[in-house]
Length: 350
Ligand SMILES: [Mg+2]
Image 1: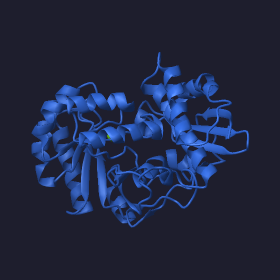
Image 2: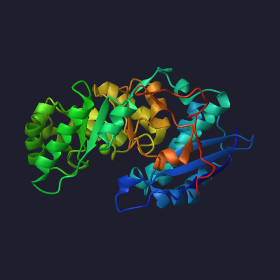
Image 3: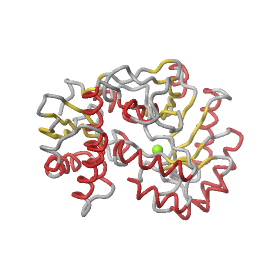
Image 4: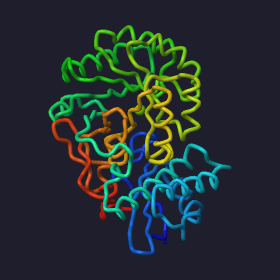
């Protein structure tokens, strides 16, 4: 099939934008059509600048290209990477490229009448355990979650007590068997991390996430053994194989968390997974409970643990797409549909 159009859209999210990047993730929708009348949908990051990158630049390298298999997606990825290299390689440009890449995988799945996970070597696994990210612990427990990630940002020394109270509550509500993780979104320094590890030791926290910035690779590597048995997780701000090569070389983290809609799409994530396997580092996808991550978990040897951010709310990604996987007994299942199994909500204002 031959690609006819590539178009990115920035949905006007019904949740008000704030200065916090994370409140709505700045996600974009990418729509690819073919001359034979097929459509593929992708999801990327980077907001309006990424829409510009796709519509004003990347799209011209795809129009007229043929797409028959995975090798063609890889070739397209390389062409887009090279075209955007002077201003890209990561950040907004790679988030834009990710959306295009995922649309191509969706297109291929639909053309072959297969879910994307079945296009991958790993085939297809049944339900994936989900974890909820947020602070509504009682609601998550009642929804069936058995794992939770607590959000916290360091501001002042009183946050030692506040964080301990939050984690104690999470443990109490979710029970002794539940996984409890903590994400401080790059707001700690090494001293804070070590003190938190001591304070939170009674609560059996599985991992600390985004402890320092991604530019503190050496410092993270030095800190990591001091935090054991708590694992050091991160990687949502890292892009492509090259970014992860640097993480591997520095031995910065115990768990890698690429985001498939940011790190270079499924094509980029597959390269990162291969490196992780060679490096003996487990991968637990960032926002892996959304269809794009879930298909990769189902079709690979990623950790079978899928993140849903704020699953008690109907906003953001859940608002934008139809066919989102439903949570059953704390697990998510890849839908019996072709591609990634989702389509943008026709009511989505764009
Ligand atoms: Mg995070």
